[in-house]
Image (cartoon, rainbow, N blue to C red):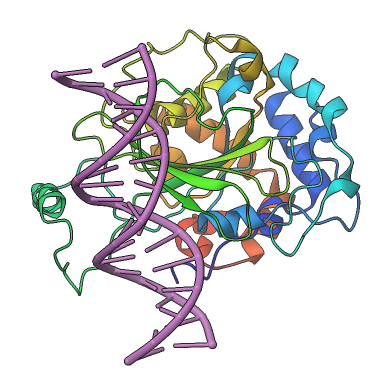
Length: 322
DNA sequence: CGACTTTGACCCGCGC
DNA sequence: GCGCGGGTCAAAGTCG
């Protein structure tokens, strides 16, 4: 059940227009252009499977939109590439508007995750590190941290997110010319990982998957001051960002690149994810943000029809909303 | 010299 | 059981 029951993007997105309506209402400005998929067109879905995404749904904004969404997003409309550009749907089924946004999700492969590993596990990790190739316990499945994935339109692979990451691996991705990179938070005792890869169909889109929760504040930047109409969503994203190290817009040596980034995500997670984001408590905001999402039922309805792990994760009353 | 990246090998889970 | 693909490790190389 771990891999097979991934929620396809079409399930997540449901009716595209409804989904965009949903987003619009959530963000307070039109996003239609972003999600304006022509009928019959497939919605992104490969990513979810690719990411092993499953389970419940949450959405959050992150990254540049976090701080300047009104400026960023409308520009997306004009940037939307020609859908006819899409190729090889059998491989990736890239969104019709690939640069439109980030679709993210968090899986709940580790429903019982805790931010901090128990001592036993830590010892085990250490042992594993020392005796890397030694046999592992057989009856204990490798537990995965909850994951949160999102797509970001960016020309740089490794988005600055306030945390320091060490790359520990890179693998070629099947059916994709772009490799997947594996990063780990450099902070000791922080076991957050992330994977970064480019969309096969739209190389300008970077798919970032965070796994685990930071057990420490960002070493590189203080929590930004947020305000204005998008505070709620911004904070929501900030909560996720704080936890997962989502890219946050900040001044860098390549500001132009970051200005091009556009992302927000649909977190697909277990009970933990949306509401339990953040190690230090932006939960309420997340919750309210999610409530907004929750009542955008068309997408949710469609989503919920795909059962898989969702049923296990979403509150029952959400399931009944269809 | 420490931090980080690259890269090939290995392990593990899953599907057939 | 076998093969495939994803994920991880760690030695070697690179960079500042």
